[in-house]
Length: 225
Image 1 (cartoon, rainbow, N blue to C red):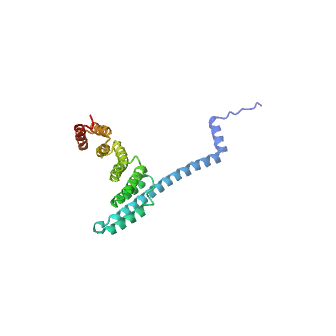
Image 2: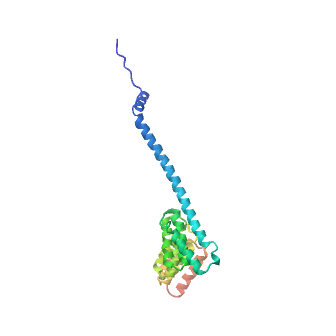
Image 3: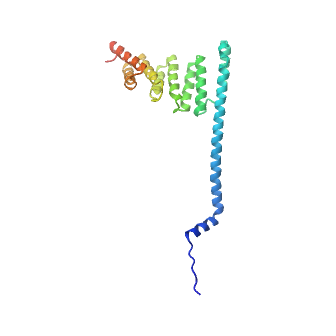
């Protein structure tokens, strides 16, 4: 009697492979599921943590401002100091939490006439999320604080950053401030370039029209050609 050869089909091979390795495959599948569940859980926890942090910052802001119009200066300062103390936990966080915490701290510091501290907080707010719409606003405010401190190089650099943010709604303001500070430093050619850029890019804005008047005056004064 001749020996019958049985050829193993691809399906049979696959079935045999699965049967022999079902334990390993089950472990791999379980690992994928566990990783997915862990990711979902982490995302949920992170989202929940962010929401709690933002709520806490809102509570700090409310405690600072609620009924503040009737407070004496020493009472206001007491509230401001308490708010800065309570914000400390959130100031070094990234993302929206760090942005919100540092913006509030900057506002408080500016109200206390602590301009350098305010500038540092605005810088931290911008760095917490450089792509956020609040970043150029922080740079614009930094420029104002540095001007108050007579740190004009830093003021110009901050205004320039705000000006270079193409979608910033106060971009023209930043561009004019940049040129104005350069003019104040007697960097007339640089001021001319800043004013001209503002006129070229945002010609219909009121700040661009102010820049045009400055260009005319600088020419009359013989500062530029």
